[in-house]
Length: 346
Image (tube, rainbow, N blue to C red; front, top):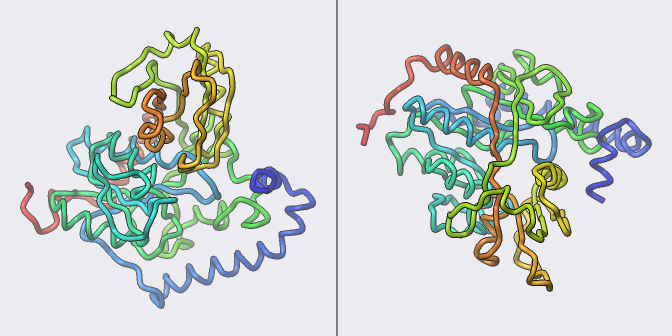
């Protein structure tokens, strides 16, 4: 059902047209909610440090987490201490939690766990991102900037920079949910004065190979190695003669499978799993002669169950112009960047 609806979102066919009246109502509710925040009838919290939101206006994954990781690493290279907050989609419980190396992924969510592992930056999850941000600043007072993984529509947290991420689907058929994939009107959301704070989205980043409209580009490829559960590496080329079962519980599993095949790996079987799949009920393949190969996101949950599986990291690189534009926004919007927010730097 979900796959069929996503296919319907790519064009204005019979199913999309049937759902269009509901989309009109959804659009009215979106604008009403936005206006309630703009007129301060609904409260929006301002943090003592700058906030960068990385999200999307389409339903489903579009490459937010790789973008967050790339931004954190970019800031770290510039000597800026960044923290990350997230809702922790699919995790067990709604409480506020710091994601540590030993935190079970079912409590943190797979994407926050991956961000923590990839960047070593402070990562907090909570049902309300403002709660996660306050907890992060209390625990790590030297933090200079917070990146919010997802949350363009989470207006309860004020932001200084908004980044919208799109994959190869672009804006689909251009209609709002449920007739299309859009969570809010596009490209209306780009315009100044439209956002809940009177601003529009600042940067658009495309993660797909064929951008559907203007915006910055990026490249993505598989790393030259796979990772074992203990962190050791296996050269990807050395797996060319290995009997492999590839699995992926991400938004676009086929993209991962295609990249593996492009690297010359022979896949005996591919298993496309639901995004954020928990692996609690995943059956061990009956033929023990096969090696499981997966994404890093899947490995967060799979490694504790399948210690002999291999995970292939994704190398994601926004074009240099994107980082230049991001740095310019930092300089113009939040200059001078504070070294702390009322606390002594640790």
